[in-house]
Image (tube, rainbow, N blue to C red):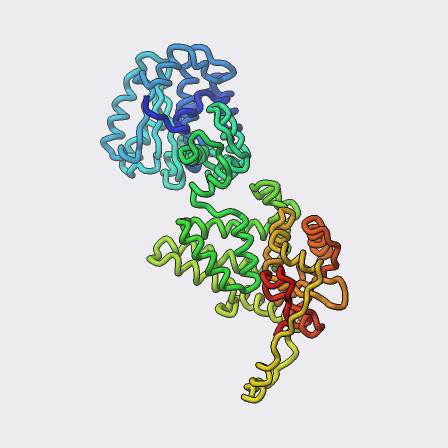
Length: 523
């Protein structure tokens, strides 16, 4: 037997199996129970939300010999015939290919004949918005006054393209986008039935990528299972198969943007390109990432509207503390424009790189948000003490250059405790307790040692980094991890690079030298 796709294998056979459309299902069941069945229905909503499936279930229910609470029994001969497609009284028409006047005239002629082996003759017209104007007009009279045994169900993803005269003759039901939790629960249920092992985070991610469509989510799950056949379905495998970007990369990129670090942004663009990630999808996902950050900044209840795992949400809340709302408005505007332009671009990577540079360099634009961003940047520089006024810059004389060359970096023995910390600094930064943006800030920090006491100085050049390291919880976390990793109690302090130099702190220039017991003064 050939393989059956999951969305076909697990297509709902009864109203109880329909997920995420409770209001629609309730109304239809009540109509069947009280025998108040209409002659024309319109089911509208995004793809994969269950319109055609509900139409087929409804066709069975109105003809079922033994309904149960408005649902088809599924075991009577009529239900079996309809389910297996063995009856001529349930007619499915694809309006995408049968959209002409002649096609509708055939329907009008057929509807005159009574059903052969069922109570009702049901016409399911899928993608009804694809019908031509002539076909709509041909259907109009029949739809208004059909025979008492005829039921029309029109399904569409674009109800605005359906003639108002058609819509006015139908009972209209809107199929909502299905929530991530509902899709995720359904995927878990099906995975358990199939006997597959999985990580819940992996299914949650697939559910989000389904974008409100159960069918799309099932198709993506099929794709991922083919990659990890007879193996546990993990989050990393799903990311690999779908060519998607983890939230960690978004966090890293956002922090680089806030620091104005164009080099890191270009590295990320290279990584995206080399990993075969669709740039258009990346632009869309990154826009939603900015949207989530903005919601977390402006609303206390926004977390309920962000469909993401608990761990990732906690990290996102920390990252959301960075920056201003105006910056996020500007980022969303730039990347929304990128998403629109990139569809027709012949150089998508170049478009992405230009957009990232714009995010890092607000001076490239003259809109209100960019001007505010430039003002905020200047205020940060002034507050940090890096700006002391305008001074005349003079080129050093040859004599001064020679004197500077004579001053070789002073090499000193490194105290044992600091040596231990330095040799393990990489594992300290990568400890699982260190979340974004603190991890990136620590990567960017330059370690110094104060000879005046047992003090590890983390020197930074950006006000953003200094602000984050100055937090009591950041310092305490670093001290805690140092003690756990190395067994050394040491004081930790954040300073600007200039402040560290002027204070006589000693720069540790390379962990290879540090581990050997050497350190040097910064030039």
